[in-house]
Length: 100
Image 1 (cartoon, one colour):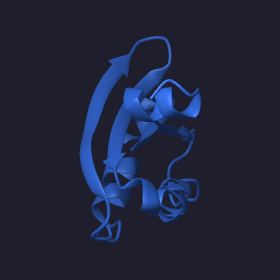
Image 2 (image 1 turned 180 degrees about the vertical axis):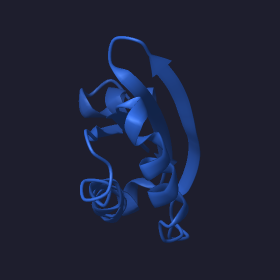
Image 3 (image 1 turned 30 degrees about the vertical axis):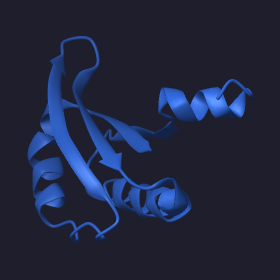
């Protein structure tokens, strides 16, 4: 399973976000992070995507950890918004609809 976060913030908040990112606590052993991957979007600001991998059995714990992690930016990064979503592998999605 993966949890994908998309973060959006204005360029004027980039240093604030960078400092906050460097101060985050380490990930628990059951989560592996890919990224962050950064994109400067002239219409929206700076976007970043992070991918967190975890076992299905740890999804609830991982979602809570990631949600707590991204909401720490609210107090220190002006204009920060985010989304957090769990994504299924195709084989998992097929099981959900009775095709595997």
